[in-house]
Amino acid sequence: MCVLFETRLAGRSIVRARRALPRSWGFYAVDSQGLSGGIIVTWKLDCGKLDIFNVSSQEVIMVISEGEGRPWIFAAVYASTDFRARRTLWEEASKLVDQGQPMLIAGDFNCIDDPQEKMGGRLFSYQRKVREFQEFISTNGLIDLGFTGPRFTWCNNQQGPARVWERLDRAFATAGWIQEFPDNHVKHLSRIASDHSPILVCTDRPIPFRCPFRFERLWLCYPRSWGVVSEAWNKPVRGDAMYRVSRRLELTRRYLRRWNRVEVGNIFRRIEELEETIANMQLREASGGGLSHVELSELRSFLSMHDALLSQQEIFWRQKSRVQWIQEGDRNTKFFHQSTLIRRQRNRIRSIRDEDG
Image (cartoon, rainbow, N blue to C red; front, side, top):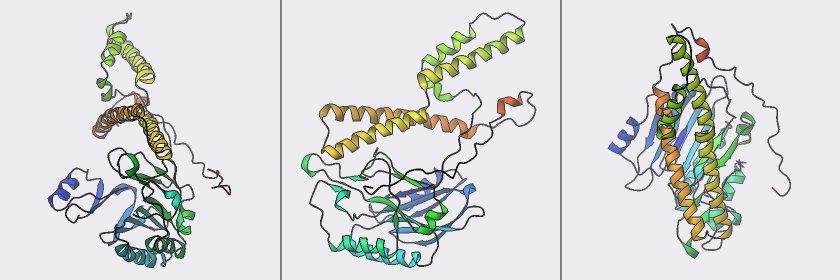
């Protein structure tokens, strides 16, 4: 599921956004008011059932059912910058929590409740809006799911003393929801093209699997790939014509695999490592109050490299989405086999929190 806030889309723009998604994805949108606000919710239709329960300019409330599991409520929150308008949001969410269903509340709350969640700008003070936010959390027994990654999720992108960082985006849950999803974890992703960091809420761990060899179109982005194929194909091979073709195909596969492992690597891991590097630099910036000109130049270089890798990732998924796997009529069935799914190991301790947090 993906939720986008402050889309600034309405009318025909919403229609165009819907057309950009495949039909296998559900879609719901709240129109923006001029250039302010707007929410889009998208979800995989084959991963469960999602019903829109209630909608306002500050939230979209959904009831999610997955298989035989217990239905739970997800409130995607985009709180107003006006604390008076947020009171309505707190009241509506409180009534929903009182129903006793497992509930996750996540999004942009536009408010902080602790001095440690802000750096720069005016000094933090326990104003009325902060006390109301704290009361909303404590009264409803909401639990902050914590996070990994950068400490702050929003930056005003100003320079010098005017630069401000805050943790405006977060995820809360009821105790019942945490019991349903004990392996949950929240990650603050890097700020790339927005003043907010996306937050990723995971309810379980992905299951790894082995992939058979297939030629990846993204390899064509690397001029060296042509030389690898040529080198493998020009290797001297003895035997009849069919054997020579088969042997050269096998050599090409080996050469490409070795070249991909050494030079191209896992682009998904490279993207993750690059985003981690970007996040660390932004964390260092937030902790130290800024970066030097050399470090800012490095950060821009990393962002450019990240954009190039995202283009390669797009090519990868575009290719995968259009492949029609052979199911019958091919004697080389082992080419299409995948390894058995690794059994989940749920009974493990992810971490232990001490008195220092």
